[in-house]
Image 1 (tube, helix red, strand yellow):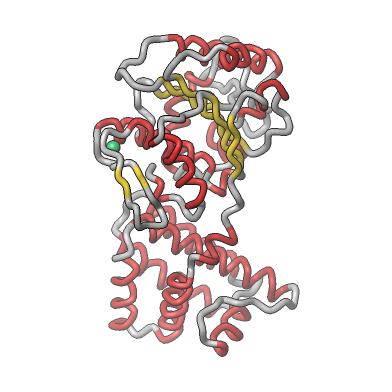
Image 2 (cartoon, rainbow, N blue to C red):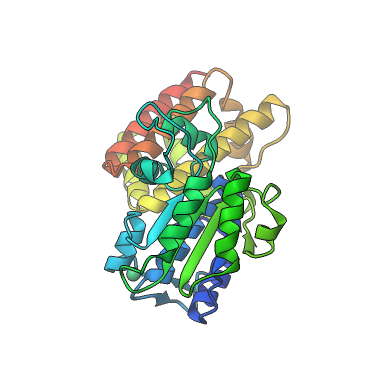
Length: 348
Ligand SMILES: [Zn+2]
């Protein structure tokens, strides 16, 4: 994960890279924000930046620094396979892991798959569903905390930082929290506990006071503000869907395919947002602004998203997002999406 893949949050990113560059890395940090705002993405990009052998700097850009994304350190962090990067997260027994001595490490490969598939944006509920423990309360328990202490006390394999990422620390039970507190009170050099959660209300005050907290804003306003380009593209594309002239549509699909994978995902997420907005607001009788710069289109499109087709439209966009995330051929994915969208829009 690189910072450039994160939507918005540039001020937070620039502050984080600045602390690394100036050697002021705090040994216990807490990133707070909804999973959908990219809190885990931010933590992973930060750890990758911390480890990167060839950090990049862009004094002129809105993003002032980033990891290189290609050095061995970057690749190990990106695949969640860095030997000095450990993970702890809420877990519960499953049919596969049913002894009483299970801990996060028993679910490491599931966690890696989950992060990769959801692009590190998955929520806690989605994680439980992924693990097949929807009906249980996941927790971070004493055994997890004992592993945190133990993993951080080992010698670093790669000679750099020893890192522990604790996802959703608010799910720690009291015994685990007290165990973790001991580590926070006596940090060893070059160790970092990076906690990533949604709320610090359930954290012990003694833990809260020992971590450096960074809060992320919800991503919606940012995404909308940064999306004039996406609005124009979306409107252009939607118009062609009504005409269905193959030559023009194919040129438009080429344009979308040229965006690059991260931007394609952002574009599809943006389109999902717009569709949701259109549906919620028109059913409630409120006006919607797409911001296409074309009043006639802005007024007519929202009415085309109806209870009869909204699910079909969302499904089509979701499937395209899923295909893009799995590195499917972008042209084919967008062409397929165009056909199913066009069909869905006619179903109103
Ligand atoms: Zn690198």
